[in-house]
Amino acid sequence: MQLYNTLSAEERARLIDEAGKERITLSFYAYAKIENPQQFRDDLFLAWNPLEALGRIYVAHEGINAQMSVPADQFQAFKTTLDEYDFMHGIRLNVAREQDDHSFLKLTIKVRHKIVADGLDDATFDVTNKGIHLKANEFNQLLDDPNTIVVDFRNHYESEVGHFKGAITPDVDTFRESLPIINDQLKDYKESKNLLMYCTGGIRCEKASAYFKHQGFKNVYQLEGGVIEYARQVKTENLESKFIGKNFVFDNRLGERITDDIISQCHQCGKPCDTHTNCANDGCHLLFIQCDECAAKMDHCCSTECQDIIHLPLVEQINLRKGQSNSNKIFKKGKSDALKFKHSGTLSDVSLAKAKPESDLPIRQKIATKKVLVGNGEHYYSKSQVALFKLTNKEINTGDLLLISGPTTGEVEFTLKKMLVNGVENTLATAGDKITIELPFKIRKSDKLFKITKK
Image (cartoon, rainbow, N blue to C red):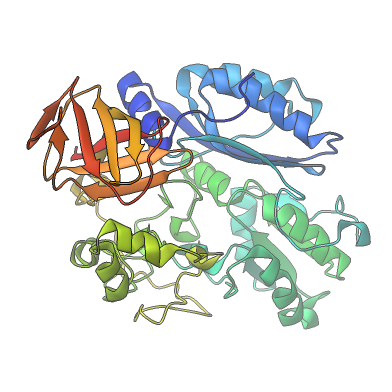
């Protein structure tokens, strides 16, 4: 009985491309009492894996929080699996405004203590006493009320690229940090003001609204379905969008555009930009904003130090990473001293530039590549540090960019400088050939060899 992924992200991406089927990116959540989260988790995997549903899902005794990608032709079948549970029957699915077939490349369902890390003791207050849900039009009307305070309960790296005009945007890296900050900042307005809150899909506000009502706030409201549902209603009902910029999302897209306003800057050169990226150095992976010009100049790195590291021999890179932990550093966008144009605190509502139509955008280096499976690992000779692969598809040449991927090995990119083909040094290998490559790390039979090429 298969209860976990058996394919790497690269293999899944290849299968998605070969299938050529449209996929739907969506999210949903539900607070409910789940007696056995582990059994619930396993049942969901068994139901969703045959449908080729992918995503990142957290389940706990308190409910479920899911961000997913589902084949369009399996959408109804997927909804049927939800309807089998009373607390998910007819549940609202927040469908992404912008679709990407590669938004998720694995089906990961994890059992957690909570479906959102809020740091709250639920036993100390009534979590069901939530704030009033508002639809987009109602939310807009209350925003226009001078007696309203609107608060963004997302993290700083989310609100920097897009937020509601006039919103309080806490300078925090996690949701749990924002709760005491906002409570203290608004302590004098508990009875006199409308507290209007929002987040990406609504789940953070479900708990936050109950918490603030417990803290004594009398008039608490929340945006139903979050920014995702707001954007849909704005479009279908032809409403004014009071959200400006881009909505950050936690999948491979890292954002979907709500308005064409760019309100943030490249953290390296200051040019108007709202494209997030992760540092290309595997020992860093810092999340930050980077324009296309800086991406090309800096090789998708956050600093010259990281840029120097990615050009070191692979064995030196691996040695530098030994014993190192990124922890939550990857999300501490704007906190690195190497980034000159970082922001903190109050963010601007001023549009710095207008985004170009999608057809006019330059294709970023990372997006303009694809990974093609070309072979499988067969053996590793430890004494000579040589790996043996058998090519099963296509051809490779010296100078090609390759990727080795496996459940134990992880993912390692390298440029092929030299190889033996069927025991003889050569610059070309084709399907059926056996090749040996000097590598400073062990490979396994479960490892796959990919060729990275431009699309």
